[in-house]
Length: 305
Figure 1 (cartoon, rainbow, N blue to C red):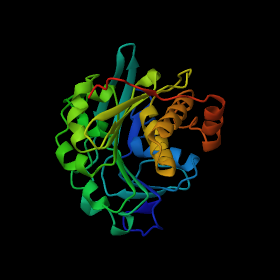
Figure 2 (figure 1 turned 60 degrees about the vertical axis):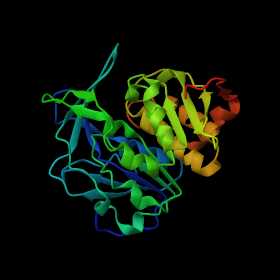
Figure 3 (figure 1 turned 90 degrees about the vertical axis):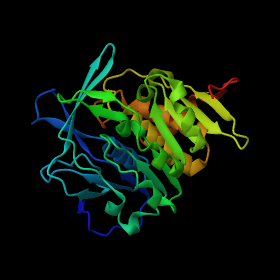
Figure 4 (figure 1 turned 90 degrees about the horizontal axis):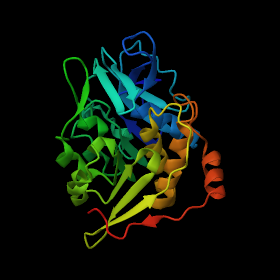
């Protein structure tokens, strides 16, 4: 692990956002798994043979051993680590957020890290400032999962959805936006304004796979449904982050968003059959499944947008 001032080699995939302590039992703060978008993303990048670099904030005593050995982890100063409790019910997930760590802003991004192949902005509790994406003008692919910008929490820590206040600052600098139906409260119309800025939006739909939206040169939006891989779910935590990272890596490698979305679907579905990050598959496992189960993208005649 590195502190924030340690120089690193050229950056392959840069992951920005705060790690979390995900409580195993709701009120037991001594027992947790390391979580957060950047944690799941680092494991996926490692399994797919890429070199992850992470910029995060966490208290010095936080156990970061779940990060893969290949990861360069730059830990910015913090007296606390963001802590989450995730409770799964028949009606969906209930979350609690405690001790949020301070934000990450543009000044925290070293100059030598500003031109990676892929940048993933993965806020978990509204911690990435609106001035961050503009520094990545030289990156090949800049993407975000906005769930952390769309969360608020009350005095008890109970997480609720909110409007994304920094969207107008961030969206113009993105090549891709990846989010779930849950993030937009199942209201498709909430995506409409994002198409003014972002040419590629992917929505994950839990067991129903994902949908790829591409803005055409004439302003119309082309919509394609990508089928899922059936899975026996054990632990869904981090599935969206696993999808996102696998999708972005394959998109950067192939330039094909349909193939990349199917690749992400398969990666996430394999992962949820195990606890935590233990089931994140290798590139070979994903491609072997895809070869054995070819698919045809399903263009939607009348797009939602």
